[in-house]
Length: 309
Image 1 (cartoon, rainbow, N blue to C red):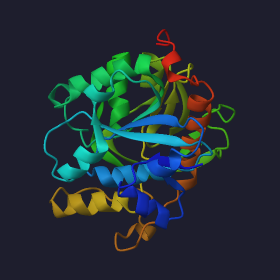
Image 2 (image 1 turned 90 degrees about the vertical axis):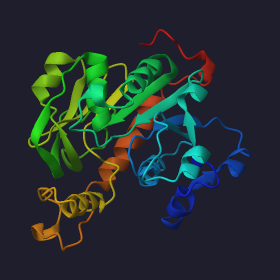
Image 3 (image 1 turned 180 degrees about the horizontal axis):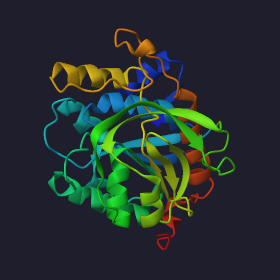
């Protein structure tokens, strides 16, 4: 089954050209089923690119999804047209009384910024608190993981001196868990962050189950036992060329970035990289939608149990 998005969203034509099944609002209204309502809080500067990446992963599911885009920062964007934001994004005030089956909070380029200096830090805290009563399952990616750990578990910010950038091997620690069902024992995933997520820190400060980790990148996939919170410290949504774009951007800015590990063929930036994590990314999101959202969400979202906190 397809994802359901507004007819005019730029991702529609892009994904259709990739033979991804996308259903517009017009056609979806003709089907007599209830799609899962999934809210995406997009914190990345290049919002259209990020929309494409997440919608691509969400499309690989037998479930129909009603995707809504959320923003919490109304400052002018340098990377996304204002018309696009005003047309396709909703403000938190507009949706705070609604319930959702799933919530995805993307990463953000804020690894070197103190939490108190993040312009929308109070709003992030408000959304995570709101989700406890209004969302069946929340999935956080990269910087959003760091934010969620601090807000929900009081885990201190731990910043690395050198950025983790590259594609790393991860060990599937719980192969029989629902979220890792079908994962290989060893799988690849990209990372791009200054945040550190040591396994012992997660075990000491939280009650989360660590389902996958990397010797180089630390804890990768974590989940609460009630399935209502999933944390992914890497970027399974990244396209093949995303790390390359970041590397060349930083190089042109004179930041002297390190070469991403295990990424460019022969470690030569002139060689075009290939995605080696795509199957894992699709399976991770399909498992989350099925086992952590669809299987436990109420058919009537008005019946969502407010005591599930």
